[in-house]
Each structure stands twice: as C-alpha cells, then as structure tokens.
Amino acid sequence: MTACLDDRALFRLHDGDGSAAERAHVDACDDCARRYRTLVDDVELLARVVRDGPPPLAARRPVLAGGAWLIPALAVAAAEVAVILWTRPAAPPPVRTASAAIDISRSLDEVSTALFAASDVPAGDDVAVRVSALDDGAADDDAWLDE
Amino acid sequence: MRAHREPSSEGGRGRPRLEAPAESEPRYEELYQAHHDRVMRLCRVLLGDASEGDDVAQEVFLKVLHECQAGTRPIAWGRWITQVAVNACHDRRRSGWWRWWRRGGEAFDDRHAPSPATPEAHVLSGERRRRIWRAFSKLPPRQREVFALRYVEGWSTQETAALLGIDGGSVKRHLFRAVRRLRDALGDDR
Image (cartoon, rainbow over all chains, first blue to last red; front, side, top):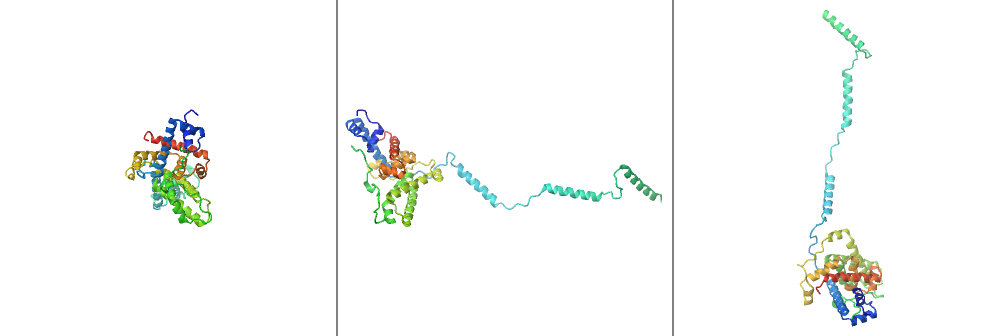
C-alpha cells in the first residue's frame, strides 16, 4: 500500500479494524504515523475532558429569548382567565326583553279594549249606524236642554 | 503502534463489571457501591448537566431497588443498569419540559469552574474545555451515547451496540462522526 490513509481509515485502525496493509503503511509513512499519533492523542484528550464531566452551566434560565417566553405567558394568561371565570359572582337572571315586550303589548291591548269598548254602539261598523247613534244621543241631550 | 485502545482505567474508572456472580445474587447496597459513581458520571455526561444527571441517576437506582425487591435477576447487572441509565437519560431529553428548559441554555459558567489541580488539568482548563463540551453537547444524542459508552464507560463496540439496540457498524459510524466533530472543535489548539 503506497497511498496515504484518509481519516476514516486511520480511525478504523485506531478502533482495531484496520487491515494489515494499513498498519504496515502507517508504520512506514511518516506523515500517516504523525496523523495517527495526533488522532490517538486527540481521542485521549476528548475522552478525558468528557469523562471529567460537564462544566457548570452559566444559568438555569439565562434568557427567555427567541419567543421562549410566549408559552409560559400564554399559560399564565389562560390560568388567569380561568380563575376569573371560576370566581366571578353569580349574575342576576337576564331580562327577557322580547317576551316582556310582548306581554306589555298584550296587556295594553286588553286595557284598551276594556276602556274603549263601544258596548252601547250597535254591532256593525258602518258609519251610518254610528252617526245615527250619535244623533240619537244628541237628540236626548237637546231634550234635556229643552227641559 | 496502538491499534486498539480501551479507555484507560486509571482512578478506578475502568471497565464496568459486566456480570454478577451467578450463585450469590448481589444485594442492593452492593450494586449501589459498585455502579453508583459510574452511572452518575454517565448520566451527567449524557445530559450535560451535573444536577440533572444526579437526578436521573437516583431514578435509575430506584429502579434497581425495585428490581431487587421484585426478586428478578438480570443476568448482567452492570449491563442492565447501564441500559436503564441510557434509557432514562433518553427519556429525560425527550421530555418537553427538558427541551424547553435547555433551549438556548448551553452556556457553561467560568466562575464556578474547579481550579485546575495539576499542570495537565491547567492545560485543559478554560476555553479549551468549554469548547469541547459545547461541541459535545451539540452532538446528536446517538453520537453522544456512543462516545460516552465507548470512551467514558469503556464498553466494546459490540457491547455498545447491544446496549443501544443498534448494529456494530452503526456504532462505528456514530463514533467516527462524533470524534470528527469534536476534533473540529479542538481546532489548531492541540
């Protein structure tokens, strides 16, 4: 093998899967041997840093940026609305305006009928009958004057 | 030339115990002593947060306690506990609350970083360490799990594959990608 190994081949070698030819090449090639040593050192360094555990976080909730505040804000608003609706005092029964208007209209009709019923006027609705009735009444009035 | 390297076992952080003795089933206290530190470290690494990691580790050992009380006997406690820990971290990361909590909150604090005790630690302190951890925390979850199980825990490729329920080839691919991205984070500062 004469061609230099790429990173994947070097990593395979590091992971124990390289072929004998690849191993031989790394042993013979200074450049590949240097890259391989760098890979081994890097992996050791990375594993050590990760094994030591994460550094402390700066803050649990440093910022509520980028719209992250929206969900909790909506949740709080919804909770407030729910509380207000739940604790609101019982409202008086609503006035049924339409039916009340009908009742009043009916009552007024009845009153009107009772007050202005023409019981002394003969049945019939023609003008002549009414006029004669008025005339009769006027004659009676005149008789009273005559007396 | 070192063709294959298992993570170093210095400081008692070597390979986890895979099998429990068949005849003498370990008690909960023994399991806790044997696995607590590594489970806590694994959870911290997978979640990128010490307090969250400790919290999940407690959940894991609660399950271990229930398992002990139930009398069931996993063949390999070490492997079973690791699997439970990985799944618990996975669940924690997937929870909506966790995602909301972590959104944009990957900034590591310099003020409370432990002071380096050795020259080597001093080299690793500061910006370099934070850079590596920033890159690690941005890895896809699967790459993070593979890296942690292979290089922090010390499981083999096949064991890691069995723990994660994927095949060995996928483990190698995830590991290669994880290392490549983490090396990019190192930059020229080597």
